[in-house]
Image (cartoon, rainbow, N blue to C red; front, side, top):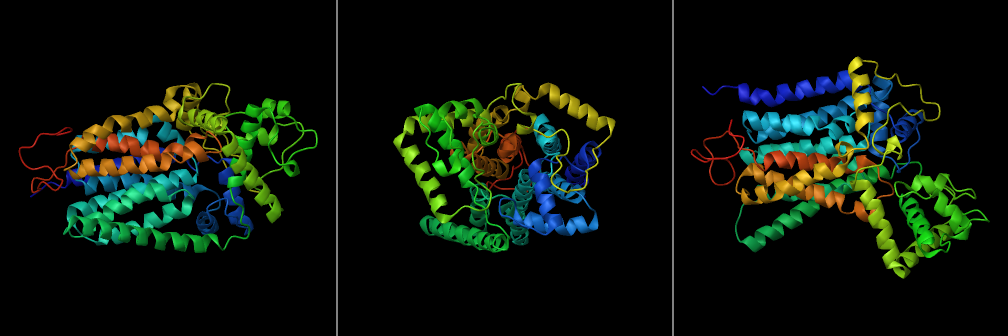
Length: 460
């Protein structure tokens, strides 16, 4: 009889990782965004600048245990459960399983960012669960796993406004595996149509939920202000609409306030003031003027615009200097928002040691996105060469998800907050393991699982 210990290993490792996080970080690190989401859950107000679904969910969980603790635990369950599902669904061997859990779960940047009550963490956890469900389906052909994958897919869509690109490769792969192969052209057409319908249906439900928000505040005006301030400095001419700046605003004022790491700097550090672009009270004419001014400036000054976006992208993906704010990477103490009750800080010795260690390394590549993403770049040719294996196929899916999620940030990121790249970094590390991993199934065929006598990496 086959031993059940290999099947238990992923869950035992996930339970250990979950317990470590609870001891080290519970009830979770709270940034302003976290605190504001909690405040809306408590106050009964909702705005679509935050995840409306998370506000409603937090309202329910807060009635059970006040504070961020239950949301924090939910996101941890998604993260560690997703890794365990992937390892179990692919039937990874012991060494590959341990490598997946240690590399993805305890990579320094991943471990510290996971401590926060952020939509980025919940989003990554939901995608890992969805990928794990697809891994089970690819091996068992049990369509129940695809139905189960709808739940984390829906949650991911509801957490992040930019979730669609990251979900598309997972949904396409799942749909492809669920449709019988016939004529290649017809099969591709069916895959495309079915994938679009699945995502469109889920996205439509999310939009209905977002429509219940009390206030609808688009996020693009903040990006417009960021770009216009940079272009004003580059062209030595104030390009921001007069209705949103102080009467004496000049380029020198913008220049002394501007920083490539966040629009928040130029919004809060000018002497003459800039109107907050995501507060209520804007008239349709003012919104139209800002949009037109933004587009016209980018078209009129393409080189300056490209240089600005490259600078922001370098700040987002690169190693942050010591003098940049800590909050671009992690939050050391809970941020108090309005009348939220104080959140008790984790007081364990493990927590203090981790915080001290993170502070010492925050300005090094250990807490930069590029080394983690580079793992994905290195893994790509290995995954492609072994693409007949289910493990390598899932690695390619994760890499595609990471790329499609990260690329739009090069032109859409309003700041260099490392959390924006949490999912691409997680996906790259997981793909790095899976690109070389070997499944533990001797009954397999060329459709993806290792057959007897085949050699592979991680063959423990």
